[in-house]
Amino acid sequence: MELDRRLLLAHCAAHALSVIAGLLVVVPLALNGSAFKGRCALFSQGFWRTENLTVGEGESREVSHLVVQQWGPPAACQFATFVGVFTVLYGAVQGWRSLFYLHRRHDDTLFSAFLTLLLSLCVLFLSGGASVTLTLGLVSWCNTVTDHNTRPYSCAESQSVPLYLDVETSSFYYELNCAQISLWFVAALWLAQSILSFLRLYNSHSQHIGPCLPREKELLLGQTHVDCPHHHLHPHSHPPSVSI
Image (cartoon, rainbow, N blue to C red; front, side, top):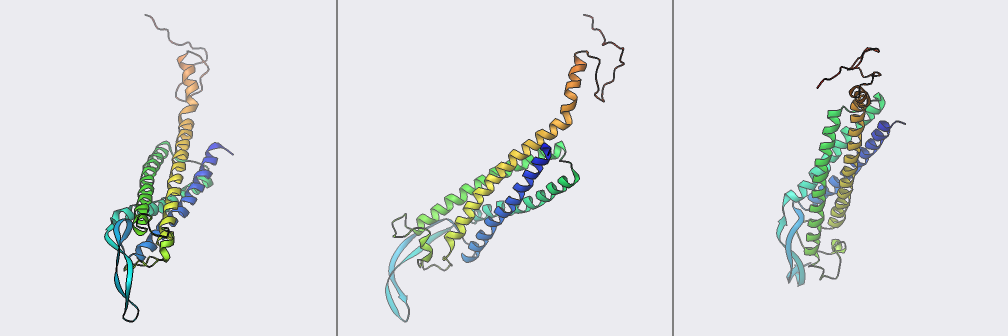
């Protein structure tokens, strides 16, 4: 198996994994956004308050409930969702192109390989930033829910604790944690794709320019055996002499 074919197979596998990982980012975030009525839990600020609330049939008792002072910026959730959606679409398109190239037994042009590398590096930095944003946002929300770990339950266990909010909080940790892990995996895949894109660019550069370099060297050294199509010398001719 040739080097470029191995690289195409590896790139195709990376694209297929990126589609799956991107879906594992988009779907949990969409479910969480629906449960929170379009609000973003990341970086939300709030505090716990204890007061008398009416529970059941006219019965009141002292209950601790969470008061959200300010919901997180929507851009924090939208940024992670954008990276996930782009990864799914790009992975599907590039995966199809890789299969097409495998079938046709050829690879990208030198310019196309360079653009692919440039795009992979750009989205690598975007996915890394989105991963950090989602992780820090989830930590901030967990600190709010657990009152900075002073409550007798963890962030994951707080899903089963009534928070008395007007949103559905029964599965927020599973959804956001799944999106967080998947987004870090997406960032790792973009790193792998950047490396593969660089190797394909190097391979394409070697195929286009490499074969003529030894022949150009022979020409410069004044040797007569030159096969590069751009230079032809008569077998009995001699290189021009340079007088100083």
